[in-house]
Length: 340
Ligand code: GTP
Ligand code: MG
Image (cartoon, rainbow, N blue to C red; front, side, top):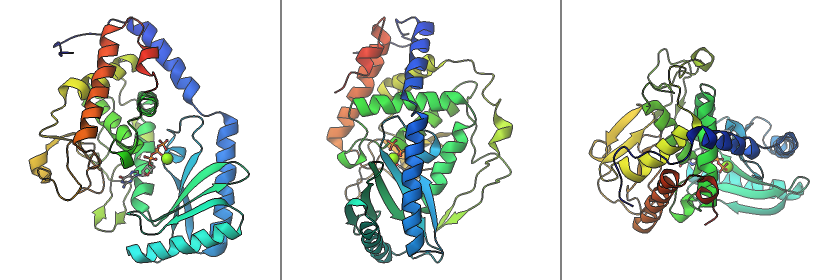
């Protein structure tokens, strides 16, 4: 499994690209599914607006950033209360109240988790079978959903790469931050970062572009960046790499090129930082910093913090497995996405 410098995939890259594009098309949710999610969202919005007429109800996560894979029956919703009930205990109380309200409104399997790190109520919308997570004043998630959507509008290769990587991560069971692997949000940031690093770059650094047209302060975090992306549609045109080449680059990077000991990937700066710079060199509590991905807004937050010794080994092996399959197989797709 040794890494050969400059090794290239065996496969016919043009054929592989055609096959990957067909896969991406098959992973897009159909119109019916999108409509069903909208129905579920409206049903929840109606109920929450009765309880909190002054509040805003937002959809976030993959159903809002364009990266939802078909048959994903989950939606993420955030209740934004006007006068920030921001302490954890008051968020917990709101979660309890929401649980009562949605239960009375006929939602199924209602489960409040008021003491979670991010307090949440989980339930199912009966008519559509949609699983819903509702959080309170989860403003960073609303802002980072918008950032991902804005990057996605610049070059379609980002969405394509994210679909392939998310599909791979779900099939190989390395897409669960509760079990020590990485969240979808983290994989998307890894994809954005890769496209920022290509030469010439496929994506810009929206945090660095001036003027900062999106301005919002969330707690101690200044969440400013350039969001006028319609003028950036040709940004990546100088780079002619195909989806297949980028998929190879992604796995090659995470299998053999990433410096797991020292390096932090940062979409905010479109560069690499060091663990020393971030003071992520020591284990603090359960946070180990074995794979480091900086959150673009909450700068003390390492999205890889949930990875432990065992799961970091699992992840690294899965990246290597994918890279080896791409390098060595003439027709790699079936094996690449083989369920774990
Ligand atoms: P799928 O459900 O797998 O399709 O992916 P998703 O895009 O919905 O991502 P995920 O379920 O991992 O997370 C949903 C949303 O929660 C993301 O889009 C982010 O907005 C937010 N989120 C997830 N993890 C974090 C985190 O660690 N920190 C912050 N600030 N936001 C997060
Ligand atoms: Mg989700």
